[in-house]
Image (cartoon, rainbow, N blue to C red; front, top):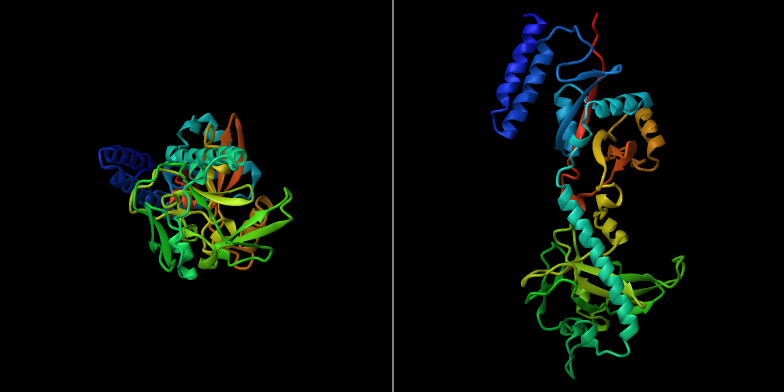
Length: 385
């Protein structure tokens, strides 16, 4: 079979695949590329589906995929994701993308949803800032219930170990948490509007690091050298907010914790329906101890006017020279002990300029798939001899 005939057949089959459903068409097209790459004579430098750009063979996949799926597709096509071993390679790829009008096609899936969650974070922070200003201004002039939901009044006689539970105000309850092994949790029994300040987190104040899941660290100076802890470890010396557990993802998080006037306040970040557990973010230290990273991609990547394409990834197991090269780009971004990491590397475009950025762990906000982006595969040139 002549090469021109095979290419014509490939084009016809690819056009027919358009009438299929999206998922079937993609799988069908990919299988055709893999099949014909095995039957075509080695008369070109690149496999079918790949294009020669400079001295390299690239396949630009414009349909957005997760990092793991990107790697899987590249491997099925007989290639890998782009190895960042030569700067001129990246420059050639960038030039090709610009000259072929592909910039506007580098679409990040769920971008609007991520932008919305980022706006909500900033709105909560801004409300907390304004609340703190008003608290400092009116704390001596207004009743507690005008500032936040007060603790329930304690009976004259009670078991001191039940104090925290007994401070639970109306419309809330303390019962088993929905999070495995988290013990008790704080729940709503009525609808709670967005930006409701639930109260002050109570506990013992001391200079010694307290029981981590129950302690907030408070800094007394801008350099964060002088600090103390608000420790709610003891239910006899704390209130009901000690039962608000740590959120594992943005879908669970409905409470914002913030410092104000040497205190810590809890505030809802959205309307909370009855029968919902209240969950907040405990902070980076506690999160890492639970294996949770809370980084929003919009804090590291410009979502407003930037296109992103995934070029490479840090492999699980690699030759030393490969890791050494990436280390020059991203120092201390991989696990030196195991030589393993799962981060991708993105090339970002804004206002005519490109820049490389590390694809961090954003699963708190994106879900387990992480960012879903267009990507590039490459393979070594075929031997034409």
